[in-house]
Amino acid sequence: MIKLFRNLPRRQAGIRQNLLNEGKTSKPASRTGRYFKYAIGEIVLVVIGILIALQINNWNIEKKDNETVAIYKKELLNDLVLDVGHFEQHLQFAKEENKAIDSLRTILNHPNANTDTLNKVIKNSLTFFKRDAWMMIATTEYPLISDNTFTSLQSSGQITILDNTLQEELVSFYGYTRKYTYMVQEIINSKNEIYFDYINAIPAQQTEGMNIVNSSIYQHVWKNVDWNNVQIKFIKLLNTYYELNLKTQFFNSMRLYKSNILIESLKAEYMN
Figure 1 (cartoon, rainbow, N blue to C red):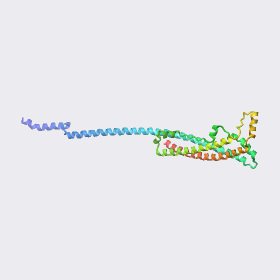
Figure 2: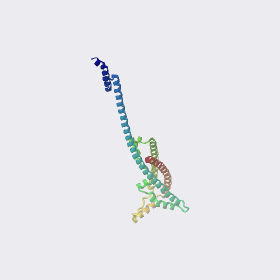
Figure 3: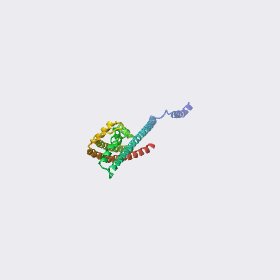
Figure 4: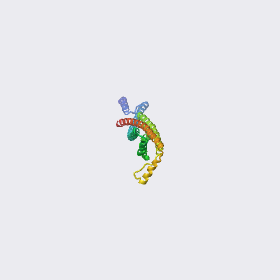
């Protein structure tokens, strides 16, 4: 019996050690602290998971935006290439028209030139001045611009996905282009006004299909023309066309210059 009591403390110590090993003798405060650490750990893991998910989502959005930007840049380039083609063509039309006017002026300024020379030039120049409506549009530089992509970017609000520098370049470029397009349109209106004023003062153009009778009538009509009035209108037409063509050459040259600069800028960004 005495031996049994003597071994009791040793046995209690062993039991206590086993309980400690099993964590069953921890104090309530100690357990609460450990649970708190577990909770913090769980929260940290959840936050890290959310941050990773957000980062992946941001990467996906950025990738999608970059793809959209690349598409818009390509479409902007296509629009600008079309504009360059139009501007070059219209610039050439204005130059050729002024060359023709220079040729007519050379004839009229010849030392032997007289009133009959002027009348003959007027009759022979009908193929140059009397044109169909669509030809008039072409040779007076109808100021169409290809700005569908830019307009779409602005109206949809998608222009904000472009970098600020490119946004500023586009707004500046199309503001400039539209301003000078309006000026070219005003020039066209002036050319058309003086054109129709002149055309209404002369007979209709003779065609290859005219028979002898019609041709005779045509020549007779010309004899009854108020030549003094026609001559004044013709000279005014030459001078006005020449000056207006110089202006359109300047506007188209500037539009070409600015278009090519923006094209090079977009190509550099698009290639990157």
